[in-house]
Length: 235
Image (cartoon, rainbow, N blue to C red; front, side, top):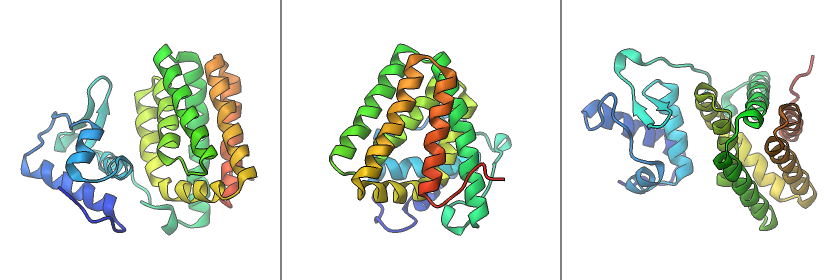
């Protein structure tokens, strides 16, 4: 199925999938097809699909189960944690607190990843860092590489609830983050600083130092907030 690439595309994809679930095509306990396959079926990018899936996870329609992937929830099991869907309609203080929460959670995820990562986690973190590095050299935003880097760290934490909630949180911040990365790519000096910050995070995690991983992640996200015109952890 194809969708026109207009504003609100991810919302229309999530509604389409919700209708498929209500119609009985997908039943409680069923596993959704892999992201790549589902994105191809719907004729959308993986970025759009991920945003749509994150919205359905927010509404409690889907959940991620370790070793199984994305599963349809039974209606009676659905619970939703809600706040504004996009940063643009939040107040500046709400956006600030949201980014602050991201810094708290991501820094702890990085600390856990440093203690718990496997050889495969190490490979994925290194791979996606290199993809970000190539994007900087090509003066591209590197959205997918950046998201995959964050996901690899969250997965390496081995805390499935933290991984799930960070996926949801990143979806809420996607527009702000994308605009920030695009502006960063227009400034070579800023882009160099950003990739250095990510290298520090990757190096700290791969070294197995939880303290260094936490500190590098907090430093990066405080700087990222500043670049976005926010001021987290202020009095």
